[in-house]
Amino acid sequence: KQEVTQIPAALSVPEGENLVLNCSFTDSAIYNLQWFRQDPGKGLTSLLLIQSSQREQTSGRLNASLDKSSGRSTLYIAASQPGDSATYLCSPSNSGGSNYKLTFGKGTLLTVNP
Amino acid sequence: SQTIHQWPATLVQPVGSPLSLECTVEGTSNPNLYWYRQAAGRGLQLLFYSVGIGQISSEVPQNLSASRPQDRQFILSSKKLLLSDSGFYLCAWARGTTEAFFGQGTRLTVV
Image (cartoon, rainbow over all chains, first blue to last red; front, top):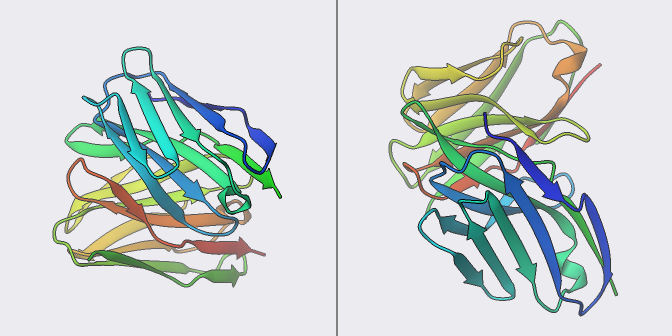
């Protein structure tokens, strides 16, 4: 059974700082790994998808890396802004028989202070 | 483009009442569909997933059931709600093993 751990659970930084969010997972037999953002009371917004054969993926100020063999992924946010404040969730995907299942950790609550 | 609709956004129901939450996807065909629940202070828990019409897999034994009467429609139901059914329910879809997309969620409070 896939287990996902995200560290830190919460992070508060001043605006403009670069930061790293960590994700670890126990089952390395994944199809891919997604990073999501969740604003309070809202659904999840997909940020980045890294295929299992890839090492990293970039979108704007976001860069995600994947070390599948060690069961780790990091999300790097450059030049953080108050609008980046949200909960960030990582989700590795595995096969459940013939199905495709996403497992989630509890996320990292990020607060960027102006 | 693909979109996912989930309703209602909020719901307050008494204990013992029935439940029906609906999710529909537009702009794709034969998606994998998922129901997740997010309880306060906990991660997202996969409740049900479906790979086709009438095909439902349950992840956690519980008071809830799911149905997929049409290709892009996924319904979460209960005959009698319990207090422990309160939470934030999220529907999601994915095409094969590609990127997954989530709806805006339903906040269910059982009183």
